[in-house]
Image 1: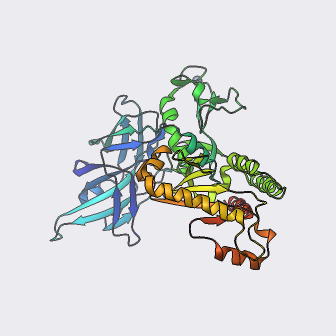
Image 2 (image 1 turned 30 degrees about the horizontal axis):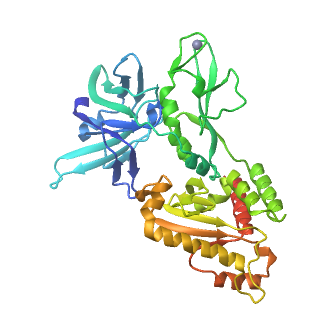
Image 3 (image 1 turned 180 degrees about the horizontal axis):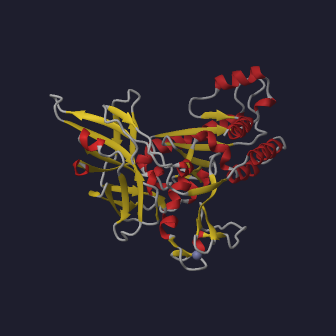
Length: 434
Ligand SMILES: [Zn+2]
């Protein structure tokens, strides 16, 4: 019976629909691409098909995964009782309870049915790309289900602009690592990595090792446990790029957050003092350069300081956002007056908008050259926007402020320096809620 169950491949994602009668299989393939190793097999789902009778025979069977190159490395899981009805979900009989979805496909006459089953692999850690062999076993019967391969997808190191941008994310990770332990000698080690491999954390110790100081592998004191470090080194940039992805099961990664609430509150307080102390434009510049968190409201994926707009102009910042907007930012001073005595735009604010108008003209004529000069490609930029930051809203009355906002040009979005302060306070609130 078990030989009537056929292996279709691995899936990146299996989404079960609310009506429970259908599900999507995304990325069905005999190759499973992974952006990192070590990886736990149990995070991988496979798809099999078979007749109802064959699936009934699964109850009490074992799914066995072994490494093709080293068949002695084996993991197994058991099948609990699964009703082979149209749709059934069953928990595994072992403590490693399984998520199983059974959907029946029928042909037009409804005569021949095939069942499709999505199931997780047994738990086992693999440290590098490999071929996995799957077998089903029951009561002495052994059926070779099939093979599939784990492939490694290397990620490029983060660029300077990406390193800046990740510091604007309130949920960013300061460090990522993997903890390993030798079961023979008990030696444990946390392999630590930072987004920028040119830096290294100061608090290293025998139990906290800098990943990039290790050769191709980690080895314990007794020599019985080794781990390849190549795939961690070449895979971690993907996780620093997308901090949320470390929560995907199977990666074995752990992390230390870059920001804590207290640090954000301190930053907001420093900024408040700064902008109310009549600082020069340059000092504010440097402060914002050092604290990219202020750009969080733009969801940056790259932040470029002092970007050129061809050879003619220089903006203060250019930010590429997650939604593919390229945003040029012009910064004036916090002391910049917003309005004239008669209520119109002050000369300084007007100058900021005139600046943006000049940029806009150059960009309209040489859009591609401007984008290329920043090291970007046209497909990364769907839209170009402009922001002017000047003055303090609390220096004028709400009435004046309202009038001011009505008067500003559509040429650019406008923020005051205390608007940025409000954004930071909101972040600290968001972090508190995490
Ligand atoms: Zn050891």
